[in-house]
Length: 69
Image 1: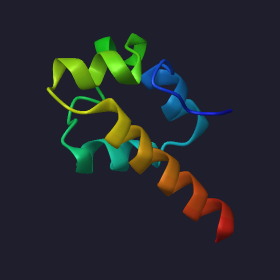
Image 2: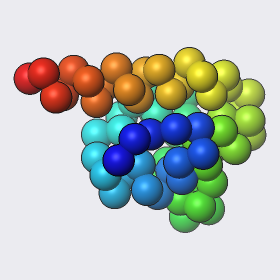
Image 3: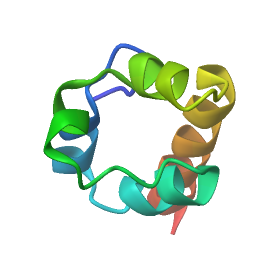
Image 4: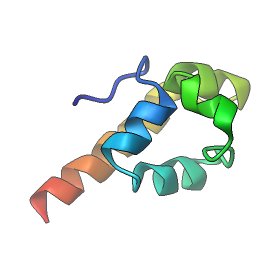
């Protein structure tokens, strides 16, 4: 599954729970909140005043590193 700005937080975490660490390191500490599960990455970033492109880049870097390991 490809991660995009429209991917729901819940879908990302189902694909790889390690993404939660990436989100929390980026400053999104509400990944365990039930409401966040139905927000897209872009919506969640907007709520937190974060750049969704930068967060998406961090997530994809994490996933790429995991693939090569």
